[in-house]
Amino acid sequence: MAKTYTTPSSGHNKTNQFEPKQETVDFLLNFSKALSVMHYKSMKFEAFIN
Image 1 (tube, helix red, strand yellow):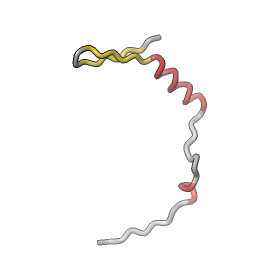
Image 2 (cartoon, rainbow, N blue to C red):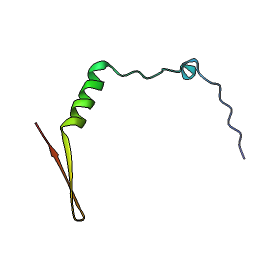
Image 3 (cartoon, helix red, strand yellow):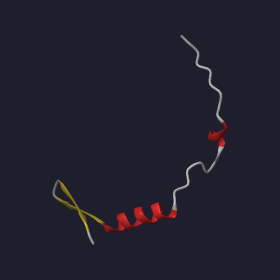
């Protein structure tokens, strides 16, 4: 079996590598607030409340 040798790159050791913009966070929060999921028997309905 072949052995794979890799060297870690300098970018992988950062603890906060991915930080979203505030506008992205706001968009996702507003989207989740506007989404309404209703269950009826074995069906699921999704609606956007604006």
